Picture 1 (cartoon, helix red, strand yellow):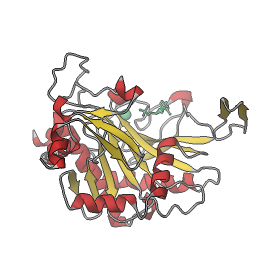
Picture 2 (picture 1 turned 90 degrees about the horizontal axis):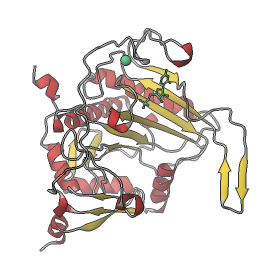
Picture 3 (picture 1 turned 90 degrees about the vertical axis):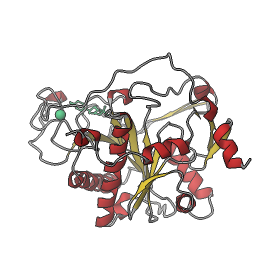
Length: 347
Ligand code: H2U
Ligand code: ZN
């Protein structure tokens, strides 16, 4: 039997070249019965303006600030920022065991739209282009601050992922050191001969088993080494180290793939699909980092329905992450879905 067929049937390990870590795949286990925790079914939001929402236009936020009557995107400094720009420098090192240092940073919130009921999947393409423009502007503005070395843009969608509010928004944490996940990727890019993601993209395009969708400028795939059941990787087809290098047409292309993948996610279980997504871009520490290939990761927790999620516990916390359905099966299921949102198709 060819090795690829064996991978479909038997437990095996897969290597993640971006983090240089292994994951365990147990395809024979996908049909096991589930008697564990069942999550609440997330209902779509119907009100377009919620008087109690701290992100809606015109409403009050914590600390008495009030949002302006914004009409497209709106960016503000997080009122409960996890990082502060003026933390004084201090380090502790006792015997190399008690090691700590203060960290400076700036945290912001980006509202994607004044409409409380929308999500990336339901926003018009033009509105997502405005969001991309806001991200590019923030990456440029925060990255230009001399002590900021990394700008992390991320969205937590859905209560299951810890989002505090359904209003479409994301967060930006920009800080004075390079965070762990990006550090691992930088090391992997540095150790690889050529560009790891240009080569990976070329390899996947000869197979198409894991590609979910694409347009002229971006490809979305379930990576060979995906950990989360329906995890995807969004890769610009051109070698770009950050979203500031996108041409105007490529910004629209990014908006297009983001709309299409989030629509397919919602369509998968006909539910507002929870996820954490975010971009990995070159550090803003003054180095060139030309070899880095920027990309986005979607990490969604749902496994087999709108209410059964994957837990990263047990062996995963103590050994390695593990998955049941293969990346190929997940890609096939996402590929088979429509780009038309179920809520719109039903009308
Ligand atoms: P999350 O839904 O991903 O938690 O993002 C919402 C952010 O909004 C969160 O980081 C901030 C929280 O600190 N926030 C404000 O900045 N002002 C408020 O009035 C409430 C929430
Ligand atoms: Zn709102």
